[in-house]
Amino acid sequence: MSSKLIKIDARWRSVFSGASTREKFFEAIDNHDSIKLSNVLTEVYGQLNEVITLPDHRGILVFVDGVGIYFESDMGLTYGYHGAGPRQFNTFLLECGFHNHDAMKFKVGRLYRKDGSEEIGKIIGRRIRWKDYTSILFIYKEDYFRKYSQGEDVNCFACTKKVSVMLKTGGKFLVFNADRHSNDWLALRCQDCGFVTCWRCSYVETDTETKLKCPSCNSLDGPYLFPSNS
Image (cartoon, rainbow, N blue to C red; front, side, top):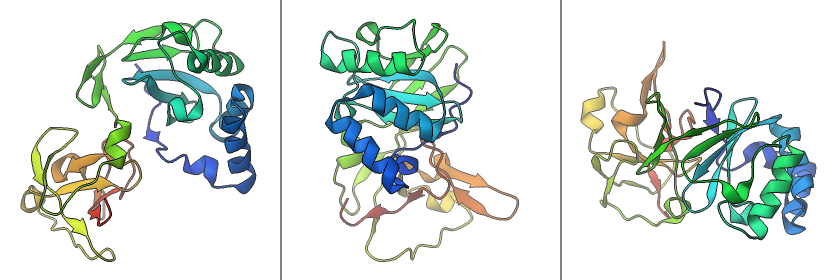
């Protein structure tokens, strides 16, 4: 199981932080240049160590520094069938040193390592659970773009508890009560990756204060009220 995945850079912020890197990233995608894409990503994140496959022919690229990024057809990278996407992905993987895998034969819910080994996981909702009972939480693409309304009942993606949406209509005005039980009804949405969570699944305590941490991408202070245009 991957012990190095510590954070998902859901919006590729490290890639977009520099104008030159951002330009090369989009140029590689527009030109379907998997070699250039691999060079851009490894320049930013370090060497690629693992690939985690998710439903809908998408997945997570896990780099040596512990950061993962989602990949999908928008990047020209897909898996699990014979076609242009998996062929591009194979080119990408070869450039990253993956010489013992074929993206056309990848199966959903697997972890593929650079050394040719793999691990089988079980998909449960938005979670992949591995044999050692550790797990990774993820979102589907439609989760991020879905619209929510004030007072709507939703289920926490992590524990499935039913909670209610509160829309943010202005600046960050909400002061959370330190008593976690008083906020049990509240649904939160990660501002980085869009993961919907409840208070209990995101509540963490530091030495000095209470923080909210996304259980999917691990973004500290990521979970908050739903934006009014969500």
